[in-house]
Image (tube, rainbow, N blue to C red):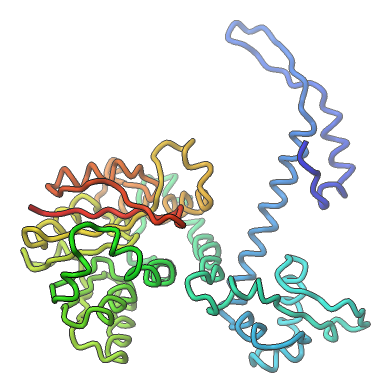
Length: 399
């Protein structure tokens, strides 16, 4: 029997009501009735899990707030502080900071000094170094606080998504600007840090050598351009173009490229299928964003046309399976299904008007391979990094 949760253990009256239900009646096809004993231990454990889901959702939301307000970054640089001191450092209102640090202590994120104070604002809180490693930019790609923003952003589309349930219609891709910005930040910190040393060498088509010699590269759905600019800095002899339909992200990418003085990088607010460029590139990249286009098959065709013969298409996607049973053990499975339900599915239906065209973010990687090969690409299959159980990479060539 799994250990009973503390909060649930306190709800003895509720559990007594549950235990009072001894039998569940059920009918078979002939109309006869049978009975089975209710597994109260299993039911109690399930009740504890539901409460844990609720509490974890609240913790995720408050972590997101702390990240965006700069509270974690400030605490990582300070010894134990009071809410007054933290508010002064971050230029925020103390009463709100006081409530936030208390919640973060209860949620197991912050530590609290043992000394008891009569006034809550005199309590001293600290951010353990091990926690700071995952909640600040100290370790770059492991800033999990960035991902916590998914919860609040997705929840803002709850009513719109429920309306899609009723109408069968979709939601315009243009309405997801904030979500796409988080996706871009997610990709930037998980892909950019591994791109040069680990991801590109997975391909057997001399990609790194060609990039050093100088080739034409395009990144479709480039987001804020971080991945593209990472390559541009490493391979100064190559030329780079980034496409995205989000004007805010393209503006941010242009500003960043100008600041970095990257002369061989350009960004366009468009989709690769809208371009008249044919056989213009030696390498096309797409990092975890193919389903964002809302028209996967047509975009892959556009990528094929944009490549020169012998060129390479590098696709990074979620490592997942169309069999729901296989995804149950995925560490972020339910989050990915949520993104699929509330973003990928409605944007695809809005673009094509056909439910049968709605590819999910949790599609089978074999489906991705099938689409790639149907267009005309040659692909040896999926590649994985040894320490990454969330991403799949496909290196495809046009003959």
